[in-house]
Length: 210
Image (cartoon, rainbow, N blue to C red; front, top):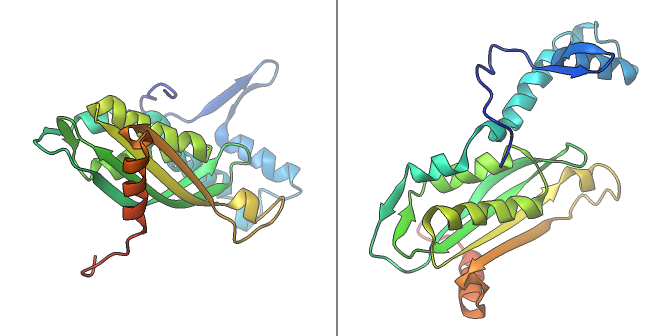
């Protein structure tokens, strides 16, 4: 599903090897990028930049080292409940795999249990695992839905993501107010009645101070 687990990642520097070029640390590669941009990587403001960028990218892509199944399977509960469960307005930040620029927004997740439910805090954690990878919004939406479907085999799953992409806002067509909405509907959520109920509940405003 992703890259294999990296052992002792925090103490073992990342190294990229290329035939004829030897081995370069990630920080050395970032220094080279700065140089090719016409900057001086030895000036005060940039001296620590390669190290900072390395740490930032490790954090922003930490989802590759996490197993979604393990996160969910630690919080599955048998229940006698067969109505819709919705966790909405989950904040999401990810990196577009095409330009490695951020996209961000909200994720709304719903499912109708068959025999099991997922601990509510695990759904945002699941979103985080897939979002902390190089992504496209369409695949991210589908991965969240499929992971829940595989974990508890509910009657169905629905996922909607609303996001803004800096690759559209800062470059290219430069449409600063554009947003993208994607959905993934599995099982009974493909039925018009269930899908309509889900989307209607998403539009309801929060009440009672929630």
